[in-house]
Image (cartoon, rainbow, N blue to C red; front, side, top):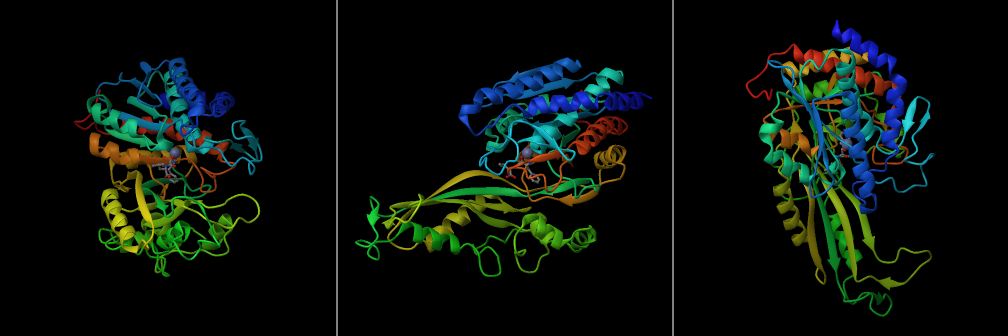
Length: 465
Ligand code: BES
Ligand code: ZN
């Protein structure tokens, strides 16, 4: 059978696949840092070369106002479904560098894990789909379904150019199934299909008082201090019960259903192990909810950074003239990021003390997503995961956000299969980001089987072949 030849090819090329991933990880494609624009493009070109080397029908770079998109397709399976695979080749900045045990762009294998920025988010996970396609093209007699690959370079900076591209190219991207590997498994040995992601509403507050920094003895207590004012605004966002204290914020929040709470509770999750993983002295969150419920299904609010005042060594008695903070809300289904922005602005206006002005800047936003768990695509994906990982997946939600999922739903009408090969302790966005090489190879195998399993399912009317 073709799939057996593909599996044999994947087994025989494990070493090559690891070397190729390392080469990709050596490219510092940090989309947020203009100094790395040339590197970011180099990562796109690396993928383009890989698509060409596997002999896929057509592949090219699509220029945008920012970093290019990589697009490749093979539409040689008439009457079969069309699968759109999305991934991202850009990575988060590696800073701060001190905690890294090896340089972030020198991939290093320790204990079966590959340590490098982007190893799990998302180069390693995304690349499994390219290697699976290579297996079919080189050993399986061609791809068993029609495929479209769309790999972007601006996911970590909000993906505005991708949004414009998808909206303008609905026909070209039309598909029966969308697939993304950019999430985690439930735990080692427990692969998962993720059916829910949180949304995001990200803001910056800029508080201004006097026209210049002042001596805190001569002027302290006579004019408002922007840092003090900012602190009181931030402190007002949550109550002692860890609930968000913004009027109307919870109104649209869909309550957790009894079946879902029961399903979460059935998963083998230890609060104590989770606490240990974080290193925090205790777990804290909204009253009345378990840790999994808080992570996956309840909205949250976190200050991401505060600036202002004297930050150098030793004391400096200064009354700063300005201060700022970046903060984000993770949203759950039925919360609208625009409505949250309006509620947040109204709240800030209400609680800002006299003597300062406050500017609210809206950074990126995305709605939460919930995808169906009872569909032919999910059943095919479950079989593929069982083939790759040796055990069927559990169903779970995640606290992270992948804005493209909502974009694909709204523009192409498809639910995305979120098939994550990462682990919860991969430390994405943090130091020593890692990805298990065993999971890399299992993910490649599952991705290859996914195409065979989807080929068995019926084609809907939206097929792009
Ligand atoms: N791969 C993550 C999303 C993710 C993280 C899913 C953890 C599940 C668990 C993705 O690359 C990411 O980091 N997304 C951003 C959102 C974006 C708008 C900056 C995030 O969640 O912070
Ligand atoms: Zn990612």
